[in-house]
Length: 160
Image 1 (cartoon, one colour):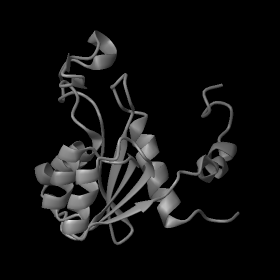
Image 2: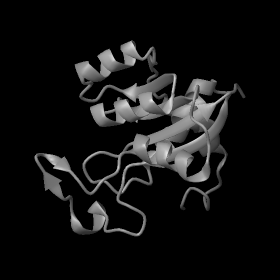
Image 3: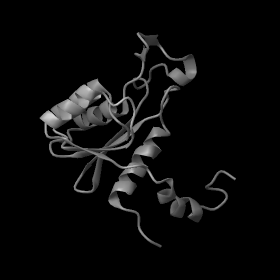
Image 4: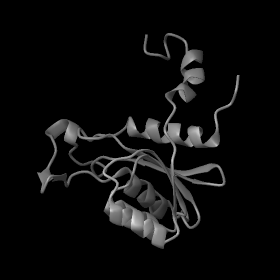
């Protein structure tokens, strides 16, 4: 069996995190990595213990759900909460970060972002990443990278 690349491994992790999302509009996952080690992960959803969009619907103001904390922000906040430094780390995210998350990523010291899907890529976010010398790399997620895992699961583990 051929091993998947590090990029596909961490991108798969971000997609697995997105499966925990409680957002009904877009499921996003983010993984912070340093030296090929997972430091923290996040998905978009409500505050811990709060009301979730999947339960009570989105709370939309000016076409944005204000109930949801973005996956990138949740991953960064997890690092802050547990004292994990982000300086020089990388982030793998299912979708291109929004403008506010882009600013937080830059301020946290993340040096490279791998994203699987273009999503409303804001020109100013791209400009800010360039100014801060944060590298961007589009890494389309290859769902086949999970096939060896899924193929090795028995019927009980697959939910059958």
